[in-house]
Image 1 (cartoon, rainbow, N blue to C red):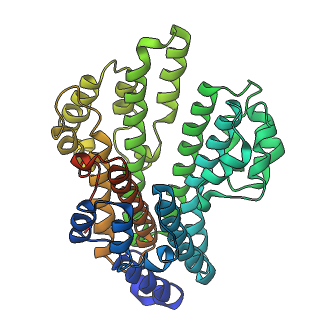
Image 2: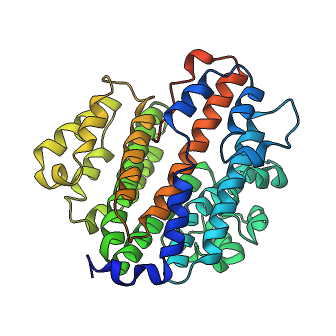
Image 3: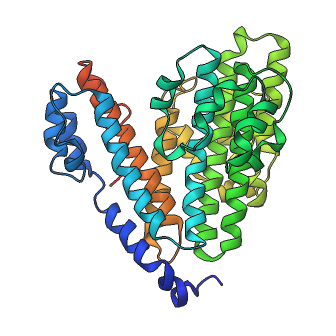
Length: 375
């Protein structure tokens, strides 16, 4: 059906596509970020944002402002827009929009379980959960002692239930098992989301396969780097567990995309330092034509970094993701614009949080370090 979306897409999806493209025009520009970076106080940031779409959400907030308040109100705007789109959507767009929230559900589950493990107050943890990832029984996650109970008592009635088949064990929940659970759930989630997009076909399948494959490979690289950073304090058995987690968590989206999975991911799993990760991500893509054709930007991403430098890797990945998300708006009659808009708005909120924190802590010299301009 690729190429024929224009014939029927607007019957059910035309209105919402117009809505999301209108929302896209309200994203902050480079000029906005330059002005925000020159602010001296959080009230100055509020004053500048009052001229944007965030104005109505911040206008009634009294001084002194806090960074958490700005982030919270900006997130409320995102949630309101998402709920409006979901309420107007019909199948299969409504299911597609629901898939977008599953990642936040996984993060919320991990946050609650980890916080409970460290004896944090459940109500305090709930306040830190992302609103798009909330579900009715989330507060009862604190009663689970192992993954089997977590599934049986709480998650069996949530959209995450099918993803737990690979990580249901009777082992007690600890930091290591929780991290394995997070990556296993993300693996199953991205595979499922990818397969759903392929069933939709057309431009949606083409654009979303690229975006989801990039997300999968970024997570594989981040897992590898996190392992490298902690090898010096891990016992041999834990190292083996981490090695297995990396291999298992290298998302199969790349396999579906017919690249040379799992060879590149398996080599990442045995890396011992960031320099090896750098070499594999650059040289491996050059040597293996299939990977080079599918993921040429990775060489450029690591080319921005000096050997041994990993702290700016996240920003490089975010910049590449933003570039891909913006490109999805260049084509019409597909659902990828909804995914792209949500991700771009989330990146905008991260930018505002970073700028607000730098201003609040009087660290103006670092204000540009983690800001990723969108348009």
